[in-house]
Length: 439
Image (tube, rainbow, N blue to C red; front, side, top):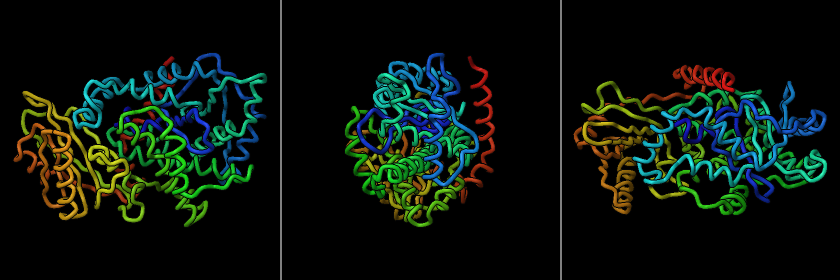
């Protein structure tokens, strides 16, 4: 989905922090990469930022190699700055197609402007971000007296450490480039963002333990604290947005904390090269399949005269939203993909999920039918072997044919997935070039 979802939390490297009083965690801004700033932000002197980079290196056990630029920005400028940068990067046509897809699926209601919802969610939350495109971090804060004195506040130092942790990741991983070039792989974007945010929060909490003696939480403790201090304190938002932009924090931190408990910092370093690749891997780390499966519809799979308007792999986390479950447990989930179709007389859509066997597929089909009845949706549900189709506007025979005809390919790790999708890194390079050409 690219412009609409999880990949944007790291698209171009943007990571953001909420206005809140908690000691840990963060809410990601739904914005694309920040390549430049309008005149006005005051630079944080390199000598003032250096102690924080040293703390991050000590906490994480990696080296920056080159300095990061930091800026202070008045908070009343932040919302407009974020929206301006979003509009400079997001392709309006792609945005419209993907918004139409998630709306057709029922993940967002009719009459709701998704763009405005995203702006409102981040506008209530953001106090700082790191931008990989441009390699800079910004703290939006109205200083009292000496502008640099605010950096001595422990809450602000936590923000700096967190965002510097993202800069460190960008120096040791290709994940930011992969996320930048994603389009139509929402679930993968969610997983990458969760790993990056989980790793940054782990670094932040490890630094707090080293410098202030604050105990570093385990995964479950962090999740409970996050629910109380962050999720419950934010204004109401669409369930799908809350799932896509909040759940990645506790899920990502839990995954990272478990990896560190098993293998130490070496395990965290390996995760930057071989991250979780599905929301299922974060929801059920003990039973999820390694790597990632992709579903592809062959040429001629859809009935004439239908054509594909948009397509996306939305993941178990989005399927859970459709089922009305905050943290889903779809047994045997392996892959999914949804298509929005433009047919002769109406818009149609289909959402196919692949599971690990017929029994799990039957369970999901029953759950989808029950939820559809509860929602009052006029949809059809079909199960064929280990595959389940949820559709609107298609004949049952067309859905059955599609379930039988789609291809499923397994990629054991990120390197294999990137090799099979070379367009992703090519798109990332082009986005960076275009971004630098824009005034």
